[in-house]
Image (tube, protein in one colour):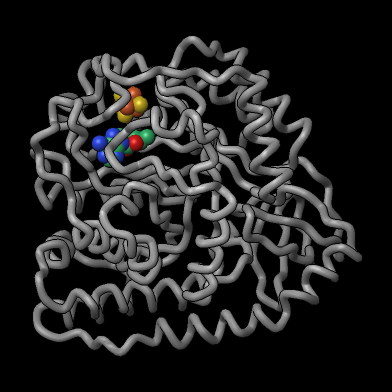
Length: 425
Ligand code: 5AD
Ligand code: SF4
């Protein structure tokens, strides 16, 4: 990412290594670079992405040392939290903090709560700090095609929407965008996302991944929808070790209604297959979908946890005017913060992405999400001329220059005491 420091490899057990940042240990896997104890590396999402020459690493760490401990102190201070629980949430938060488990009834009570929300968010933030500390990661996302064979009722780039300008980046254009993200902006983890666009054959995608990995030491996530497990296996072998695929909703009936022709069980079996293949898995859902009950949201959170993701990716449904759900009511910021906090309460070590959809709910949403249990962010690295056309939901595209977004993201993270260390496995 654009916010990363090298760590020192202090122990090795096969491909498993321990990477240390100023004495803090994080486990990681060295996939394709052989490392030795004492060497310095960058790690992302628990994957060692590349080595750093010792003198260069020491210079970076020297610059960071003081700031590193300042950030930690800041996070400890901010997460100590003054809001103490009261009323109906009090026993629930105490139980969650001590055990990490809640009954479905208790989870429903959290989602339904109208009071004590500050205490809820503080509690989740405290758990985040105690369990996974102030590490964070910032991934870049490149949306390389907005063509899609599907017609999901909620989505602005569904094939039924004839009103958008479709684009499809060539392999060279994708490589250029990756070069810019990695070489110019320093990203160490990138997501390549598209609609389900079968104009790219499996071979095309594998070729693009190989070309990227020949040039760059990064953790590359594929977010290309439902392709065969064999295709994903080939992408993994080509060097894309991450996969982002949401199951969207745990309610099977609602799933097929909103995603015509598709079945939840097929989606879940693909997601489980990705995990078995060894992918660093990011998955999750949308919440606030029309026809969804609070019980479904509880089901979504528990289903995500049961899939054992390396990263939780969930976000609010935002009605798109050119879809059949245009007049539905979308999720609110409190719905979003409750979903983040509740996930943290029942999955203490979760790595929770504060997703871009949240940002459309309020200018403060990223900050609030990070203070309600979230710990990772994503920055849109799609070339400016295509951004507005990747129109999943309104308000998604920012016209801010990438450099400015990176600066404001880093300053947000630092204002909250978050350090550029890897989250580990
Ligand atoms: N609101 C919020 N998120 C949406 N997505 C698609 N349409 C919308 C919408 N209207 C999300 C889905 C999908 C991801 C790429 O974008 O969860 O998996
Ligand atoms: Fe296509 Fe994904 Fe949008 Fe569905 S949500 S229409 S699969 S891009």
